[in-house]
Amino acid sequence: MQKLLDRIGKELESAFVEAGYDASYGKVTLSNRPDLCEFQCNGAMAGAKAYKKAPIMIANDVVARLQDGSIFEEISAVNPGFINMTLTKEFLAEYLREMQTDENLSVEKAAQPKKIMIDYGGANVAKPLHVGHLRSAIIGESLKRLGRFMGHEVIGDVHLGDWGLQMGLIITELGKRQPELVYFQEDFDGEYPTEAPFTISDLEEIYPAASKKSKEDASYKEEALQATFDLQQGRRGYRALWDHIMKVSVTDLKKNYGRLNVDFDLWKGESDAQPYIPELLKKLTSEGYAHEDQGALVVDVKLESDTKEIPPCIVQKSDGASLYATTDLATLVERRRLYDPDEVLYVTDKRQEMHFVQVFRVAKMAGIVKEDTKLSFLGFGTMNGKDGKPFKTRDGGVMRLEHLISDINEEMYRKIVDNHEIDPDEARVTAQMVGLAAIKYGDLSNQATKDYVFDLDRFTSFEGNTGPYILYTIVRIKSILNKYQAAGGRPEEGVIGNAANGSEKALMLELSKYNSVMENAFEEIAPHKICSYIYDLANAFNKFYHETKILVEENETRKASWIRLLMLARDVLENCIGVLGFESPERM
Image (cartoon, rainbow, N blue to C red; front, top):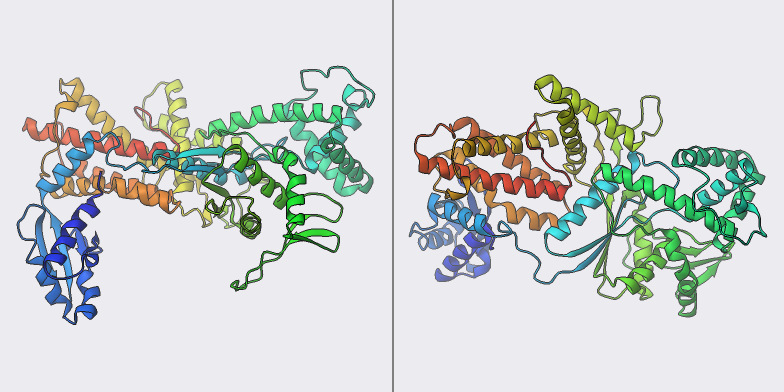
């Protein structure tokens, strides 16, 4: 379905042509002075030089051809050459009626769907998720949902850290504690146990202890490095332990990501890229992209057009070890062979920007990805506490994600039971839904690339630009619709009519922006634009609600029209929060 701005723009373009000017000057935008008009066109200003005429003369020529009143209730040329427009109530109502009958509520799905892989999450196995994992998970999940919503095939990959020194550390420490385990007997050739000799709680204690020892004891670290090497060379007992670590860790990760309503299509990790590394290095060296520098293998990626220093990309250390760049390049090899994506988008901390500049350049110059494969990086800012520093627990430690979620759920539960008489079990479920909205909206309402302050009091408030406020608005709409139906009304039989007052028209105008917002948010990789939109939409609805006695309206046709309008508002809001990754309860 054509966007409202495009529909109005077509009228302006035709009028410019009829008046003897180029159609390109007919671009329409939302008014930056909503107190004066709803839409505006500044094309006359741009065309003044080309046609050697005063802008106001061009504007008047165009306006004279748009006076039939079918679309514009008011259209005028204003000095020095602006064209101001206000839509007729009939045209706007007709647009919303068409929108409501469209299966996608006016959003145009991709005509040529792309296959997009999104690399997000990035958790390390054997470690608990903490607040540092929050942004990648929330932003990545919203982009995955948004891409699918727009009609693309989107594959989400968690890309686990599962192959580095932490594995050697865990194996070494386990060997110190339980040397009798068969995994450490090099001559053992039987079947290894199916049950792991540790729990996730054990792993979460073992790894920090081993990491601490390795920093204090050089010989211990050397043992861990050797264990890592032996694992990567395929030692049977160590591979069996690795399998146990993966199974226990991934089960726990799925549970905790699930609490964020985040899921992945692929649970691949760095280990999956290892088989591709030898041929990758051979390609880079044999084709002349990589050369030796102080024993390491590097690829020069700096371009003549660069205005800042771009260091060479190291793909193999002097001791023969691989690096993150090596793994990421090998992962691109794997992704091309197994999935052949049109685009790969990485959602990580913005401090990794240089790493991805290097990796993308190597991938392109060496033909690791196809020439037309788009490689994108969305670097997000830091989640800070009120002191402006990275968010910590009260004692200064890194907060586990499950503890943060529990704290917010408890705060929401307290607010819900304090304000309403409600069954405690229902209150718990509702608190989880509202708590998730508080976390996700609190994050996504900020531009991803910027740092933001995590303020528990503000994020859990039912007032202001917050997730709970958005949910409260949706629940209010649901309540009105339920009461109307309970009184014998049939919501689906109404027809959206002409706006009866200013606040109703303002709500209708907000709803008409839906397809534009979703398309723009996808194109600009900007979920915060969806948040901004639903906040404006919620405000528009609440203003209309407070100024309009909907359920006691005596004119049944008008009441039915309002109910139908509310159904559209509910559907648009619920679609938007679904893309953002949370849901609304039936009541609060």
